[in-house]
Image 1: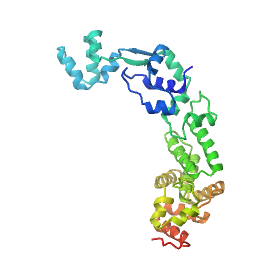
Image 2: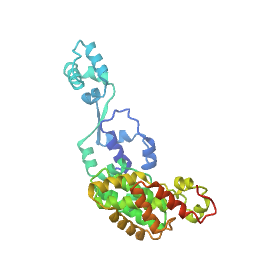
Image 3: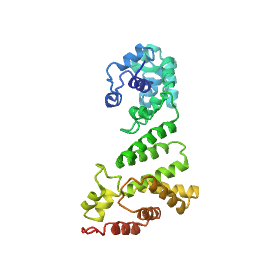
Length: 316
């Protein structure tokens, strides 16, 4: 029975030269295994073969290198790369080609391919790995099976688990990171429009409420007292996520969603995250959302300044 690290190595080694250098950080820190002799063990178990794969190896050479080989053997050097490769294979014997390519290539055996097909979950996690979000540990905690091959289900199941966990623990920075990762991970697939809108608004809510930069989870009132200027507020506490705003504007244009609909859904999110102590009132956050959607920076500045006018420190 292979561990996750060995299955990862198996998927990576297919088509690589025998002198391929593993990313030791991934193997040691993600999978807790050493890269030493891992390839040899996979070959020994019959999951990989190590052969002179002539066509594959020659295709990795530059065109000038292929032409030089042909020229030295008094063969035509005209044609595209694929033609040059075929001409070498057709006119040189195996031993001559082996001396040219010098190193062997790892290829999956039928048994190795079957093993990967039965563990699609491992391939997804390694391809989409993100510290503390998409990991084998969080996947296990979220109850994902090894044969799960639907990326949307995997993303949803892991992030749903973490969102519930961090909301209860009031770890707002972690919650922001998970939501942000969920949004941009699912944009690679056919994301559900309702889910897209919901996630985007939640990210904006957390940014507006000052949680996006609240790395150490200090009390927001203490943070508020430390702010010297309006620029401090914008840069350190409530950075407006314009990438999400831009996506929302495109979403509205393509789906006919009105501002009123967005505001209504935004109110639902405020209720859902009512445990969070916000820098802004519900009314202020809705106003900020509306201002952001219309690029009304003057209105945003005014809301910021009004919010912090109770401080003795001047907002510039």
